[in-house]
Image (tube, rainbow, N blue to C red):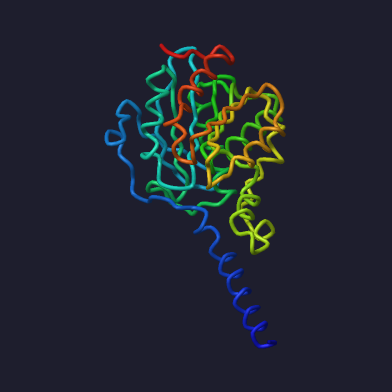
Length: 275
């Protein structure tokens, strides 16, 4: 019996060690090919470069907002690249908004390796670019998709603390923290204590000083909806939520998410719905 217990302990220890060492490979799934504007159905956008404060030069796609309109900065999730979100950007471009699709380090032909600290630097570079283009923070919409919701929350909280809040924040399939989601999926190890990139939105969400919309599928198995509900409960007003009973993680736009976001933006801060 003692031998079996010792063997089990060794196997368990090896599993925990492997998960710890390879956790970023489990979290981030970049497509490394450089995406194409035309193939992604956004030929009216242009490729720009974002300079991070640690010396990286990152690809982004950008179309300036018409005068008086908002710029939607889209922070995508943990897989693929910005080309896979062209269809989503198309909806907001066609509604009369400017759009920036931000590509993370290590994704879409960019140098570097993703981490929470690195993605925060990438997000700040996108914000600096937008401000350099003459877009005031009050005319910015931070749109965070899945993993990118953590960056949207953190940057919006930073702007709130600085007294220069953004115009609105939209979170698609967000989480309370990646550490909590990891613990849910890896319940048999102390995952929350081993995660390096915690993306603790729960600790930051109350710092957002802008209208907030949370959209989440109630059938989401990747980030179960109770994590989003907990995050929403911690947020301060003004806030709205759309819980989609038939949607999972990647199909919220098949169940009305796009219409909900456009309706929300039409209501807040005078953002227009169409040209």
